[in-house]
Amino acid sequence: MADGDKTLPGSPDESGKRRFGALSGSTKGIGPPAEQTGGYTGPPGSDDSPGDSDPPSAVDPSAQPQDIAGLPPLPRAGDLTSASEDSIVDPSEAILERIDLDSWKWPEYFAFSLTRMEELFPVGGIPRGIGPVRDLVTEENDFRPLTIDREKWPAADEDWSTVGDVLANTFTDAWLVARDGVALAEEYAWPMKPARQHMLFSISKSIVSAVIGALTDAGHLSPDDLVTTRVPALSQSGYAGATIRDLLDMRSGIKFSEEYLKKGSEIRALFEAVDFAPRTAASANGIKDFLKSLTSESEHGGPFVYRSCETDVLAWICESVVGQPFSVIASEYVWSKIGAAHAAQVCQDRWGGSIADGAISTTLRDLARFGEMIARGGTTAEGERVLSGAWIDDIFTGGADSARVFADAPSGRSYPGGMYRSQFWVPSASRDVVIGIGIHGQMLYIDRSTQTVGVKLSSDPQPVSLAHQHGTLAMFEAIAEAVPPKPEPGTVPPAASTAEHSAAPPSTAVSSTARRGAAPAGAAPSIAPRPFAAQPGIF
Image (cartoon, rainbow, N blue to C red; front, side):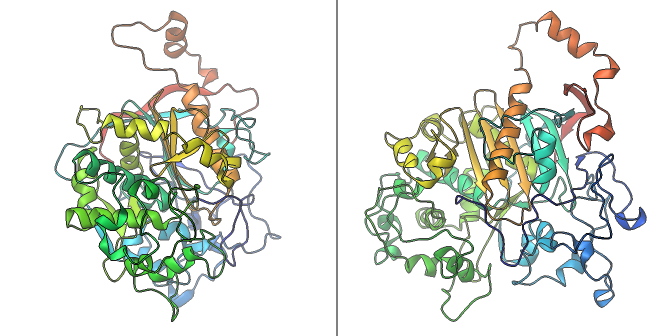
C-alpha cells in the first residue's frame, strides 16, 4: 500500500461516477439480466441511470461493441445479484477470449479477472484439508443508514456520510461482517459469488505472515534468523545481513519502489517478471530470479518502507525450510486448520515461484474465517490452536519502536498512531484493531475487542485510494460499534434491549428497496437481526 490516489494507466478515475448495481445477500435469488430489463437504471429511487449525454466509460462494459466475434454482451459488474452457483449464466468463455496480459486489469474486465485468476495464470492450490467447516449462520441486517465517523477517518470522501455511501462508491464486489459465527451482513455482486475465489492482492501478505508464525511456533525458524541462512541463494543479493523480522515489518534496506504507475519502478519490474504485465527484454525470469537481483540502499532494520518483495522472500523462506511449495505449506500449517470451506490458491510464475505478495485468492467467507482465527488469539471456535497467542499478541502490540518508525513514514500521516507489524497494519492508536489492505480496494478488518471481522473485496480501477481505505475502515467501525456485544453465558440482556429486539414496530424496519440505496428520510437504522437463512452455511 502506498499513499495517495493513483489510477491505472489509461483508465479514467471514475470513483465518483460508477453506477453501482444492487448488492444482494448470499442466498437470495437474482433478477433478470440487464438485457431483459432494458439496461441498468441505478438503485431504486436513484437518479443515477445513464442518459444520452453520458460518455462511454472504461468501467462500464456495456459501452463496448456488442457484436465482437458474435459474442453476447457482457453483464455489467454490480448489476446481477449472486446466489447459488447454478442460478446465474456464467459468460466466462466469452470474456476470456477478450482478455490478455495487456487487458486483464482494464476496468471493463477487472471485476471478472479478479474472480478467474486460475483461468488467466498458473496457480498452486492451497487445499482446505479434510477437517470440519466452520459454520456461519447468515442474518440480514440493514447497516446502510449507519453514519460513519468522518472526523476520525477524514480522508473519506466528503460526500459520504453512511455505510451505504461507502458501499455504493467503492466498487464493491462482495462484503461481509461476521461475529461469533454469525454473518451479520453478506452481499455479492456479479461476477462474485459465495463459492468463488477473489484475488486478495496484499491481504495475501497477512496470510504469509500466519504461515511464518506457524513455522516459528513449530520451531522450524525464528524471526531473528538471517534471511541468507534460510535461503543461501540470496547471499549475493541486497538481502545479505537482513533478518526475517526485518522483512516481516518491512524494514529491510532493500532498494525497492512501490510506485505502481511509475515506469521503471521495481514493483513494475516484479509484475513483468511474473507475467502480470507484458515482458520486456530486461524482465527477470520469475519471482526468484527477480529477488536475487535486488540491491540494498540502506542499513537493514531501519525505517518502515512498504516493499512487496519482502513477502515473496518470506514465502521462499517457507519453501526452503520445509522443502515443499508454498501452497502446500500454507495448507498444512494454516488453511487446513481454520475451518475453510474451499481451497485457496496462489498465482505462480512459469518457473514455479509463488507470487505470495499479492496473488492469493480466497472466498469471502473463508477470509472471514481466517480473520476470526486472528481475532480469537490464534485459535478456532472449536479450540484448535493455529497460531500461538504470543505471535498474535505481538501483531497487535508491535515491537518497542514499531510505532515510532511508522510515524516517520508517509503512511504515518495517513494513519496517525498506527504501525505495521508482521505484515498487518495497525491503523490507529487502538491496539485492538488490525487490518490487511490490498490494492484496488481489498480490506480485512479484525477487531479483537468485539470479535468483529469485516471483509470487503473490490475491483477499484485505482490501485490506491486513501479515501476508499478510510471510508471502508469507517464503515466497519460503525457496524462494530452499532451491534451490541453478545451476552455472556448465563446473563440476561437488559429488559429495554429485549423489548426493542423482540417487539420492534414494523415502521422501524427499512424496506428491501431502501436497502439498495439511501435510507428513507427520518428512518432509523435497522440493526436488529432479521434472519433469512438461519441455518449453517458452507459457502
